[in-house]
Length: 178
Image (cartoon, rainbow, N blue to C red):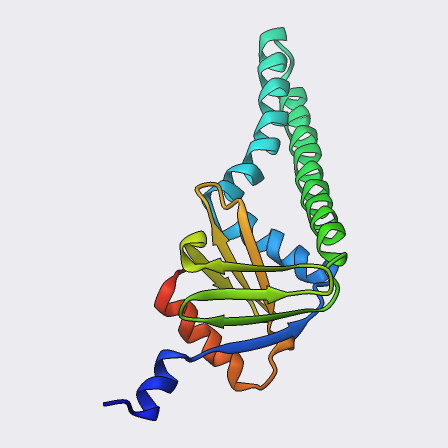
């Protein structure tokens, strides 16, 4: 017995047409940095790596506490600047790669996601990703032990407004929300 309602439920899908912008990819990098363990470690590592040698050197040399604190603050500033520059650079590199694909169409269903661009196409099943995050503008799919596999679907690309809700439901069924 085949009912149309059962068939429609099994083949629920959401379709999005978009071109990834630098702002989209900055959002992806921001999500990775804030919501994944690997991203948080990378965010903390550079500032700690700049503060620790300054403080150790200052203490070893017997400098005044004011000099130790001043060195630590300067080291922290350099580390934070390095993190900001690193994130911007990562987003620019991702954009340079994705810009070549041009306008993309992504269809997501219970089997996974299929994306077709002007110069490429790929299909990813749900085993590739482990988590997802939702921002006001994007759905960001994250996979791999170090959050090394990333995908973005901008909400502005929804072919119909209900596609955003359908995508959220599909993602909730297959991935854990960050």
